[in-house]
Image (cartoon, rainbow, N blue to C red):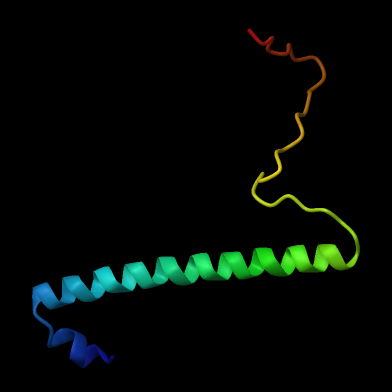
Length: 73
């Protein structure tokens, strides 16, 4: 698609193209993210390391010295 073809679109057509483009961008971004996660897990598996991506397996609780901790309940 060229700039000339974009300029030739009506407002309604241009809005639809933008909507389609936004959906496509989200889909491609998610696909790349999943491919990257799969590659990381594959590489980690080859060396026998377990990985947690995006907190999927939970993040360890960190305790800062000198700060009071919340008590459950």
